[in-house]
Image 1 (tube, helix red, strand yellow):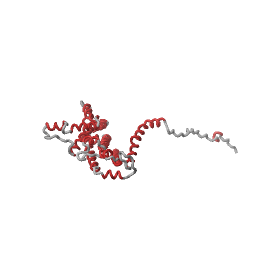
Image 2 (tube, helix red, strand yellow):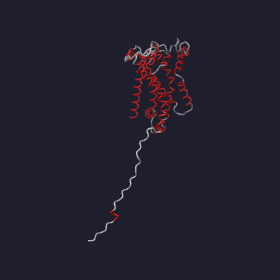
Image 3 (cartoon, rainbow, N blue to C red):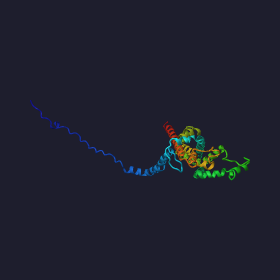
Image 4 (tube, helix red, strand yellow):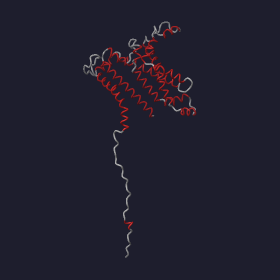
Amino acid sequence: MQVKAADPAAAEPRARPERRALPPRTTPPRWRPRTVQGLAYAAPTAVFVAVFFLLPLLLVGQISLSDWPLLAGDRGVNAPENYTDATDSPLFWPAVRFTLLYTVIVTVLLLGLALLLALLVQESRPGAGFFRTVYFLPGALGLASASLLFWGLYSPGAGPLSGILERLGLVDDPVSFLGSPTSALLSTVFLIVWKFAGFYMLILLVGLQRIPQEVYEAARMDGASRGQIFRSITLPLLRPSLALTLLLCVTGSLLAFDQFFILTKGGPDNSTVTVVQLIYREAFQRMNLGTAAALSITVLGVLLLLNALQFRGLRRDGAS
C-alpha cells in the first residue's frame, strides 16, 4: 500500500491577519484652552451678577425676616410678621389693583401701537427712515426727564395744554389733567405710550424684517388677502419679537415708579399708588425696612411666576 506524501503547504496552519493596535484611551483634559477662555469671558458677568444681584437678594431676604428699622439696624428675627403687616396695610390691595389695571392698559396700548408703527415703516419707501427716527426719538429721553416734561405740560397754570384747549373753546376753565383718579391714570398712560411706543416698534420692526419675502410672495400667488397673510404668516413668525415686547412691557409696568412719583405723588387720595411706591413709602417714610423688603420679595416672586408662565406658553406654542 502506497502512502501519499502530505502537502507541506496544507499542513501548515493559516496565519491570522494581524490586528492593528488601538491607541490607548486617553481621557480628555478637563481644562482645555477653549474652556479656560470661555470661563474667562464669563467670569466678569458672573462676578457682577453675584455682587450686584445675588448678595443684595440674600440681604433683602434676611431683612424681610427681621425687625429692621431704617436708622436702628437689625433687632432680630420676627418672621413672618413683616409679610402679614405688608398685606394688612390699607394701601396694599388698592395698590395691587391699580398696578394690575395700569399694566393691562399700558400693555394693550403699547403693543398695539408699536405693531401698527412697525407695519407702517416696514417697507423701504421714501421717508420711512425719517419716520422711524421720529417714532424712536422719545425713547432716547430718560423716564424721569420725560415725566418732568409732561408735569410741566399738564400744569393747569403754567402748562400750555390747558391754555390751548381754552383758546379753542373746548373748555371754559383750566383743565387739571392730574386732578382726578381717572385723568391722572390716563395722563400717565399717555406719557408712557408716547415714550416707549418707538422702542417697542424697533423690536417688532427687526422681527418683521427677518421674515423672508419669499413667504409673502408665495402667499400672494396663492391668492391670500392681506388679512389672511397677517393672521397666518406675519403674526406666527413674529411671535418671538412679540413675546419679548410683552415680557418687557409687563415687567416694566408692574415695576412702575418714576412716572407716578413725579406726576401724581400717588394722588389724588392715594388713587395712583403702585406697589413699588408702597415699598418706597414703607422704607423711607415709615422707616420700616423689614416690611419694605417683604413687599420686594413678594413682587419678585410674582414677576418670576409671570415670566415662567409666559416662557411656558411660548414654548408650548413653538412646539405646536
